[in-house]
Image (cartoon, rainbow, N blue to C red):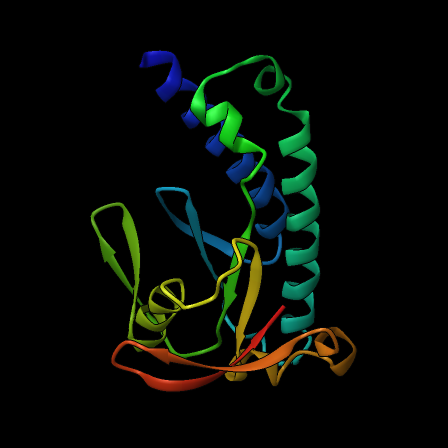
Length: 168
């Protein structure tokens, strides 16, 4: 069981680090929640931030796939995490909204309705294990060419009601 845990931990850590390396120049890592990384940034007001975030998402997706195929010990190992790792995929949710930063000891917590919404969006009805999900608030800042492959959906989000979203 120890090897099982160690391999699961190693795989998730390696994949998260690959993603963080690509997103951190554009956004700040706020915290890790299990196998999820939560990033945020201030709006610099020049409107190009959303495109920079989309570009970082593309790089992160590429880095995730490359890292997953590089984890050599995984191919040789028969433990469940290693066998399952080839099925791991990246899900990204992006939203633009107001948030507050609360400092508690050495930790910075981001708080507010927008933060709650992002967490709720991860509990969605999408049947795919790999997707990008953008709220309209975020998507309206993204240039049209970056949105061409997205589909419009309506998702019933707990305590937020029916929201129009953009999914890829």
